[in-house]
Length: 248
Image (cartoon, rainbow, N blue to C red; front, top):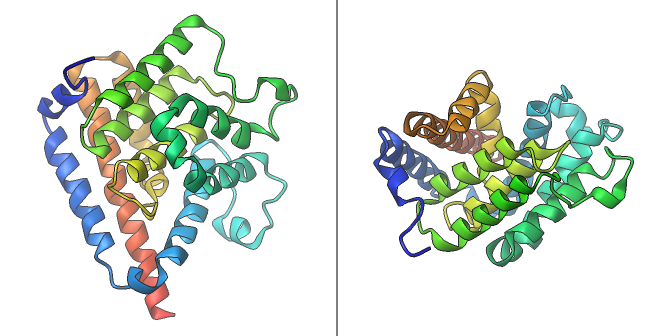
């Protein structure tokens, strides 16, 4: 690959404006004064809420209060999402240099309590086209300098479309989004609760993904705009965390 494979996506209607809005929302969050003293606390709360929202999107209707209190320990989807979120810091470098290895690790963490055959953990779905598209995705990640929101949207869309890491493909995809935003410098401390943004927009989530799967320019644009809007919503959620901590 010589030319940036994702550069043309910025020319799709509405994509650049949505990406700019997402960056502005994250920049506003990063300027919050609470982060000067409590960025680690905000990041931890973001991870907790992110795991909860990701599990909710995966169909597990557990209350956030139960996740926070530890009363959701029996739910395997929630626990897997929490483990995957906790691995972000240790997987950032791996995501840069060996994204398929990072995805395998996320799958193993997220699905550990959900599959009987643990030998399959970390292995993508068996059809050859799945492996080929994961290889293509890894190559694209190494070749693109597109904005982080665009790259994260493509990662998210591909992993969901392939359903490569069942039964937790959604959880894996949403953590991969966080890794992308961290690794590409938009959200280096993993503060944005992007999963909450998708939860707030859940009525549009499936439709936007279906549009992406169609592969038309309009469909890809719809998905990327949805993903950018989720980043805006996630930054808003993190601002609310900062405000709550400032109030004590």
